[in-house]
Length: 220
Ligand SMILES: C[S@@+](CC[C@H](N)C(=O)[O-])C[C@H]1O[C@@H](n2cnc3c(N)ncnc32)[C@H](O)[C@@H]1O
Image 1 (tube, rainbow, N blue to C red):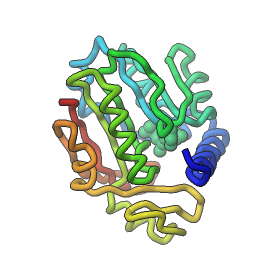
Image 2 (image 1 turned 120 degrees about the horizontal axis):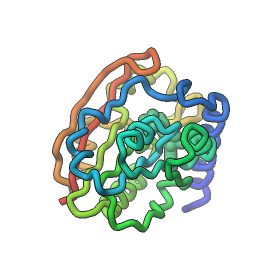
Image 3 (image 1 turned 90 degrees about the vertical axis):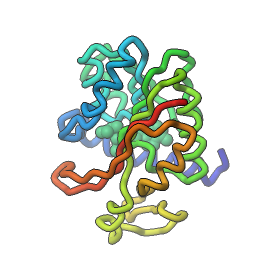
Image 4 (image 1 turned 180 degrees about the vertical axis):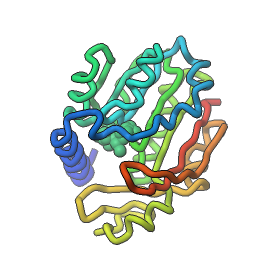
């Protein structure tokens, strides 16, 4: 990783650590809905496999899956997030790493990779490399389930934008970075996978209306 990129990543890691250190509890941070329920039948199909929750945050989806009996690995680069996960349930397997530096999981049995609101922080090159790593991590016919910011979300954020880093990738006044996708951009980035479902959704998230794109694709 070059120095500028490393600096950006350390800065972002710091922002997330501060956020999680401030809240410390799952109920402060967890989104209100378990949106992955709609893909329950795909998770069920991989019941005897391992699920990787990339960028798990305080672990809302990891808990949900763990409580349903799945073998789940909760992963995040924020140690403060991983501490919240462990404080709430010490039995959940967790790992702390930066997903842009590779995914250090050497298990041949990964049935599903879940990335809920955690892959929309990166440059285009990093996003392409990350999705390739996710593809390689999955067993054949494994699923990638994701949720990312929609371009429509940009309209609500636009007063908060401080700098354009590249097309559809911005730094906000808070220092945080954000990428926005439309369905065609995300479909193109995931073109090595078989697309099962990709949708744009809007709903109330922590009291605000948010626009997301979520979906499920399969390694083919
Ligand atoms: C908006 S939160 C999503 C948390 C959770 N998945 C959810 O749906 O509520 C984004 C998470 O991605 C993590 N994250 C961001 N960049 C990361 C990176 N490069 N490597 C690992 N985790 C990262 C952050 O620490 C944060 O916990």
